[in-house]
Image 1: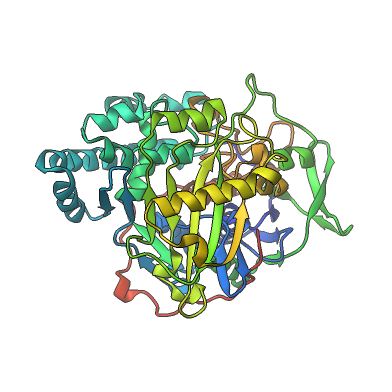
Image 2: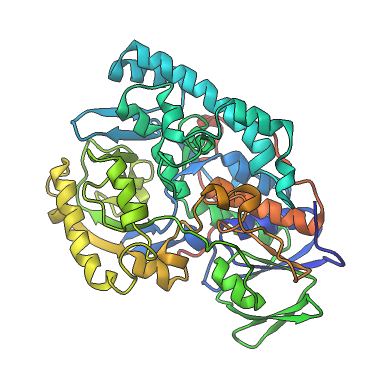
Length: 523
């Protein structure tokens, strides 16, 4: 594994999102001095939080999977996620509602899910689910060890027996076809293949290997932190501070000072100069390239994932049919993905994610009130409406979403809204997200593994990248891994994790309160 040459005693980490915080903790655990520089008033990045009247609104991820990856970062400095954050396991992980009026609770416990599938679709599909679950577990074990939790220096690293194992598992076939080998019911197929959208690829075109995301969502377990998802970066920042990191908030980096291909200092917009031995950039790829004064050459332009419109709504009522996470599928499927990734049209029959975080933490809203988060995937600004077009389009689309929610059983939603915030590609673009998408570079084959933008940059000896735009990719688990992999580029440490999740404390063993106060500012 290639590492940063020369001294690496003092590392400046730019960006206090999940990847930057994970990187900082792993660097601290390896004995490095760390200065963490963040342009916002507090930690979080995409996993930020804003106050909306009396509501506390997570601005990014709504779900925590694979918490052992976060625990690994805390453990690097002798700390523990479970000491700092109270986690509630979600049962069900999701509720899936379909256009025909049926619904399915998605359980991560195998026995509970088999029972639910049998109720929903009969014994043959329940048996198929069991075979699918076993396949997902095998897929995870093969991929995590060799293809996700690893630093690639060359595509030749793929030449390993695990590649043959992945091929034998059908990992290089198409996702929807592989899921169809286990499940015949098209509704169930959707439940285990919609996750391809997280990777920015339609299930019909995604590699079956991407079913590892379904493993994380439907097998490994789903949790929600007390205080919202923002409690995780807040706790990580507190752990880093306690381990000796210098945290610099409201400090925007304006330039990197380089001599002979090596960065000697980070300069802030305030004019302050921070000398350093190495730098980890966790900002968006275009911003990182601007700071380095170079853009890596690629034979084909990077493709970005679809974007999303999010309606955050504080309401005076809720609806009993909603779980913590509810997937509301439209009747359309292939056409929906075609609209999102090819034609650039808004979904004509949308599939929506509706999250009600007050299900497990009522303190996120005033007494007697509820918080709802409605996510509608939409085309990014490369293939769909421009960022500027969303200035007029946004309010109209918001109204159409509310109408659709009411048609799907959320009667009176429009009148229930007390506070709201609408986020569109215009807002994502204003935050610096390329193509107006918070989901970064898509996971096409040519943008995955050793073909994804690497975390070491040629021509700059001591700059490392981390975050969802580089290896291994998009999502909370993968950006936590990204931070660890970036740290290992600096320290030379193996950065290896177990091939399967470690046992976690039972809910009864978790602390009764969350510790570590921090800012609730937007990311």
